[in-house]
Length: 309
Ligand SMILES: [Ca+2]
Image (tube, rainbow, N blue to C red):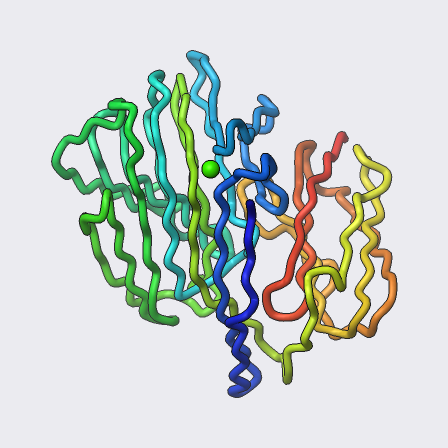
């Protein structure tokens, strides 16, 4: 059962910046992962599934591959994210929490590797990774292990702390974060040759930040709809339509398979109604892309589309 609580929405209008706090939980017991953004090596077209009330990432191959899930709440800051993980036996090179900045280029954290817990902080662009070795742990013991990451503070200084089974394993302060890099997409993933991992019981508190908005309309989840693009697959044009039943600040953004922002199709205050936007993928390569509609401060929905050049 996926549960998004908007009861904590608090609006502080300061210099055109609006902060909205929220919580998100998912125990996958309803059998779906609506709203999650699944990621995969696009050549494989393999994605996480929901089985027996748990998220399952599984494949067997000698070719390294990765499966992952970004949380439905989009790029956030001041976030505390926790998820349980369990190995089904085949193991994985890396399994852990994924944190990628809103610009798609800053941080990735791996929480465990094989039978040894390692903490790896890296830059997605430069490829530079610092490895922090910790005591060996058995991730193939069939037991659930809890992974948690906190990202606190605002640009230019943020603090990142990681826990493993409730024990703090790593903390660091980053002092040169750009404002739009302080927000991160948070999720979890597995990477390796043979992966058989289960995840469950996601919980998250976060702050989403919107700039240049004077007020946040009171829009409930049923008050907007994002429709599947048409045509799909497409080459190179497709139309994306959505409807909002109350006025609000609307952003419609296209991301690639790694969560990097490709194009902002809409970014303005709109009145209630139905809207159609044409997406031109003429300069993009074939593959899956995601489009995310955000209405107000933290109500959003994501859908996947396929470009075949
Ligand atoms: Ca469950």
